[in-house]
Length: 578
Figure 1 (cartoon, rainbow, N blue to C red):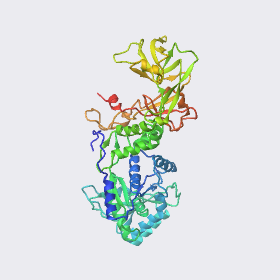
Figure 2 (tube, rainbow, N blue to C red):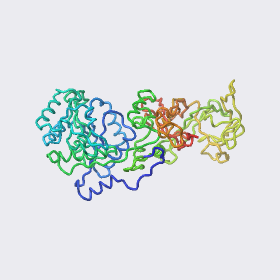
Figure 3 (cartoon, one colour):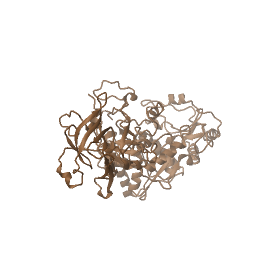
Figure 4 (cartoon, rainbow, N blue to C red):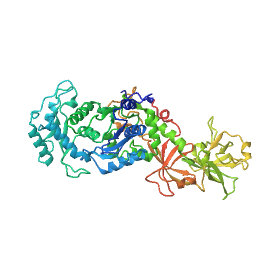
């Protein structure tokens, strides 16, 4: 996979996973049954890549009227916490998927897994190895050199059963004994060179407490979990392709011993999500949080699902994204603009319109009666007239965007400047008469006169032909609030990697690519209708983009807003190097 290839990958014409399932349906392999699973480890927060897997696994189950299991692979007690279990459940629910009765934990099956391991020992297909970790590593071999059999490989069944039982009883120190499958130390697939299947870990488990001091390896536990739950299609990412031979070997051995019926679950691998301008490495995400480069796991700039939700990304946008990028066997880079456009597409249809002035400059209408106000009317959604209109109070003093006034206009500037006329959107036509400045020469107020017969929606409005159309908020009725302008966390499409044509080192620190403008906190003036926004309410702030009321910091009558995405994709052009 070329990290310089940042073109948006087109959605494939077909979904190869569905092709496999369609063939199984035709052959009657599973008697029309489709069961998938999403098996996260509860050792961290889910990210954008997990969203692709969730949409695929649950989406496949929905498409075939099947079921998708939510299963926690909690086989590593040292890194797992209930906090992560809760956050994963919340994230999957937020994406809009349900698992019904199919909520499982690997720890529910520890007794069955132990029995399966004993069964392998009795069949001569597993043994307790007393080599140290360094000795095992040295004897494993390389890609071109076969491994060497452990000196303990030919222990008797009785001795292995005894040692394994004593491992469970806690008689041995961590690392002193390990249970391995007996396959082939000369196999060209290193994963078949007697892989470890049980290790000693004297750690308290978040669900089973201190009931166990030995825990199954993930590669041993996962296929057994699939078989216990009668999963038909075990869909995972490409890095597990080399593990599939062990997956099949293990289930075949256990089916032969009578543990599971045939047909056995089928593992299918697909390309994981590779997205520009983000890092999805758990190690790097932890570093960003622990070193304070972001404001916690739910920072809206972080590619976690809790962060995405707080930023205002929507479940519908993620599902559209998953559908658009498709499923393939080949790695490809997806540009961040594809995800942003999916969010933009959904929010354009769903988000009500409101007005906010982000960089306020005062506008005074000198001929409008002081102390008077009136209502203008603005559509809640221009494409959905059934949503009606809202009232926007109009008064003598208004807030406009600072960029909408120039004392000496440049060519093509059609907004406010002395002598020019513009329409205040939903309101009146006004003519700029000048401005006021402070002692440093900064413009602090724009002066204008309004045309009383020009109000939008009245017959007189057609008498005025102007090129500029500005948004505004009444200074007497609007209110100031905190708005966070979020942008991409990284300014480089491949953080920490070289781009073609750059003179940068290949191994430069990914932190050096952090975008210094990824978060700006401003005080904006908002139309009064926004006071009633509830946490996670989405809006299009006309002209500026899509915003959401922060789910954590908003209070009744005082919402704080986060920018979700701009109205159009101008990021690449604005941030292009050279």
